[in-house]
Image (cartoon, rainbow, N blue to C red; front, top):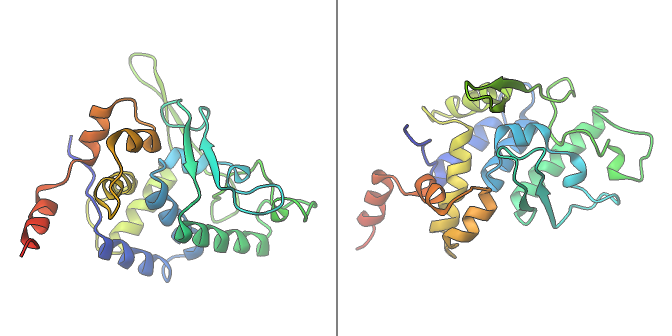
Length: 221
């Protein structure tokens, strides 16, 4: 099975710029893209991730939270850190929009910025939770998908001229950037941040594409 394409920095910046001026809910879409590319979360996780795992009760952003077993794509909890300034800025801008449009607000304005802490962090255009589809495999295993978010992510990539990319590109790009950034992260820590079961599976996900290796080699001299 072919890997989701890795998205180079300039293409990601272009996609975010296009998303910011396109569609009916650009603020939410930019926040979704930024969060996916900045945390490596899966779509079903983004659809169910609760606001209280992002905000403290006093309205401040949490330093650390977790993708809990009931939300995690593989049922295994993993840590999540809100250390990326761009991710926090995009989400906070979206939450301000939610407050202004009264999407899942409460009467307790002093707590969680007046938003329902148990509601998902990300909501549909109408301010409702994203719907998940439950599927049972021939072996009896149950899996979930979020078709509306899948379609949205494909659209956001396509309108920026990035063909063949999907939400999995965000997850893979997150892993590759951890491994090849200015301060490379070792495979064991990448495995934990992505919530993957084995080092081998982690390595397979983030192994560089031949095209990317060619660009690295081209810049040697």
